Image (tube, rainbow, N blue to C red; front, side, top):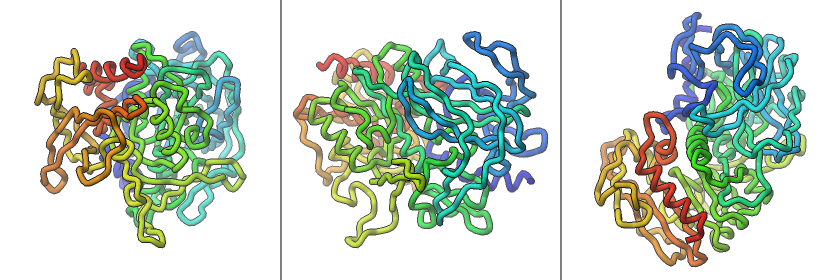
Length: 500
């Protein structure tokens, strides 16, 4: 397969990636240049480590590491050297999670399990490693219209999550004997009380998933392919996508790094975090009202009705809400069981298709604009990073940050932006303030602005909306860290955790 074809099937990730200028952030198995040509002349994604060792007998923490050939090299969706997905997005300590893996050509492979955290700046710690496993070529993905599913793949390995494992964001790193690698993210969730509940946006991650990025069959809620291998837009994209499939490319979701940025920073400074994912919130597996605050650390665009109702009820009960990105609660979605009867494995969003009343699936089009929850709402893309301009610098959020009125924080308005819409209803509030007002130009050169919002509900709950993709990366992303944003976020979380 030539370089030109490789570029063609990579275009799906590139099409999505233009809204995320930050990459994934530091984790120990993701180092090296952003993109390079391998020894066959193929373009290889940035998450391959050119300087990776050939394998050691003992890895971090004394865990064994299997010897590997030079590389490792990133698996792709054309040859499917190694790809996999989990039976569930989140499990509790003591429960089991199954992995379904395809390996081509069939050979032995291993699964390293990592937990995301600060860990002295490494970004993750290796928890354990599987025994050597015998890989098989699983059947080709099934297609029902634009919906692609691998629910018929055989189970490959079961992990019984040890009871002593800390809840958190985990990644299974799959590596073949000849050095190809892919990833499977999952969550170990909490049932214990904690100050803050971190909710990982797995529903939004799946909406962007174009697996398989093969130039033929893959589809997301944004893109699909035509018979010539050209990437099509939303009008031709999938309406329903399945969780029963790997993530495209190297197996890490687009925008996953935003969540990892917050996790590294928050765990470094000792915040009491519980963990769950968006489908846990949807299914009622967590009680959000039992926490002082809910944190949505990254791009969290796709919400079901049960998710929104649960969060609204928590706010009205006194639980604070922290949205550290932009374009949240934008599309309304439905979750359904898989063909095998497993609940919440199919994600449906009708997007451009209108109902009998002429409405799309936008929350604002359905009569519930996101501003009624967030205090601001999505305004558009930001083609080039712009400064965040501080407003109301005497507010406690900016206390001890060194930020003054009108100060500019470089690059903090990026990716996408929110602002206050004067003609859109606001939520009920006891106090409300805008903490940034930042001009930028859209792709057509027209003047736009971003805003950061904070309001206090009648219940006493704080609701914060950063209004930009760049807030979480400013907490712990090399090259993007800003001490003012770190301190402002600490001011916010400290006040929430102390119920001030």
